[in-house]
Image (cartoon, rainbow over the protein chains, first blue to last red):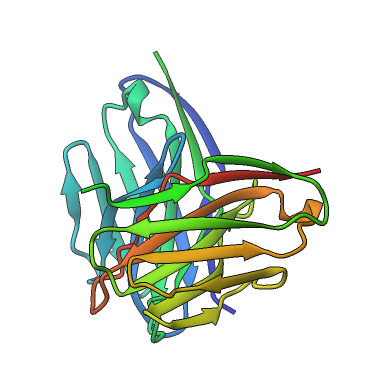
Length: 112
Length: 113
């Protein structure tokens, strides 16, 4: 059975701090690792990582995948209160329908 | 483009009642999915569709049925609601190919009393 585990489950920081969110996965026929940000409503897509060791960046957010050790990290530098959200990672396996297996999420709270 | 929309946004049902959740996407995506999200359990796949007229069971299909009569719409039905079906329901769609990115709707919060 495919499994994705995120840590920590929750994190409280102050504005300006840097945070690292972790995601480990066991996904049959693994193809890609995806990160989503979920505020009050729908998860919104952040990154998709397919190749090991290549960092993807978007502003203050960056992510990297290690396919040998089966994990990914999401870094957020100079955090802002607007970064407060649940961050979800998901592993995509090689099924015919593009199955995503989601982790439980990390709840990030950024205080002013 | 509206992306993925869901109706209704909120609903309260009594045990045994039935209802249908509607998902619509305007991106011409082939694949559509229904998930439920419960505290501490992440998103779990209920049913999915790989194209118009086709549906299949996901991880937690019991108590739900789906239909995809038109490419842009994916309906989720609860025939006889149970309190265990209290959850937030998300619909998602995906184009296909080597991109696994799914686009999510805003969710429906369902409470069954």
